[in-house]
Image (cartoon, rainbow, N blue to C red):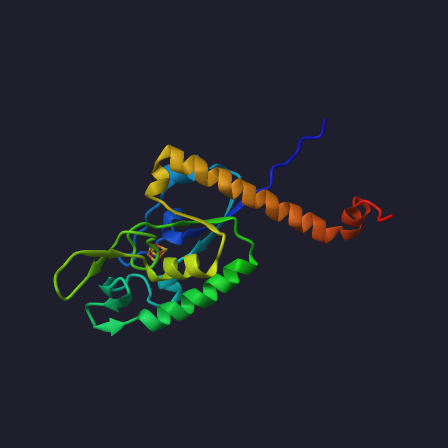
Length: 195
Ligand code: SF4
C-alpha cells in the first residue's frame, strides 16, 4: 500500500535558535532539544531582524526603553534610536513572510527584537517593566492567525504539544488549499450538480 506522506510543517524561526552565529556577541542560541522535539518534518525559515537591519555581527547590544505604550529600541552605547528603522524592516519582512505560507513561528525569548512577552524594558523612573520585542510585535499584528510561540515556553511539553497540533492543522490546511488551487476542475466535479 502506498505510504501517505505528511505535509511538512513550515515554521519561521529566530535564526540564532537554529545555531546561526547572529547574536550581538557573535554567538548563537542553538535550541537543539527543542528542534529535535519539534521533529524532523519541519522546514525552517530563519529570520534575524537585527542582522537584516544591517547592525552586523558582533554589534553593540540594544535594549527596549520607555513605557509599554511607547517603546523605543535603542543602542545605549551610541544613543542611536533604531525604533523607526526596525519597525519598517519588520513590517516589510512580515509581509514577505506571509507570502511564504508559514504555519507558525518560533521566537527567541527576552530579545528586544524577537521576544514575545516579558522582555525587560528600561525606564527613566527606574521601575522594572516588561514588553514585547519590536519584530515580534509586528509579527503578531501583521500575520493574523499565525501560530506564534517563544522558545522558553516550548520547553513545556504541554505547550509544545498544543503548538505542534496547531501548526500541523495549519500545514494541512495550506496543503489542501494548494491542491484545490492546482486542480479546480476536480474540486468543481466533486460539487453537487444544481437541479
Ligand atoms: S534573538 Fe532575534 S534579533 Fe537576536 S540574534 Fe536571535 S534572531 Fe537575531
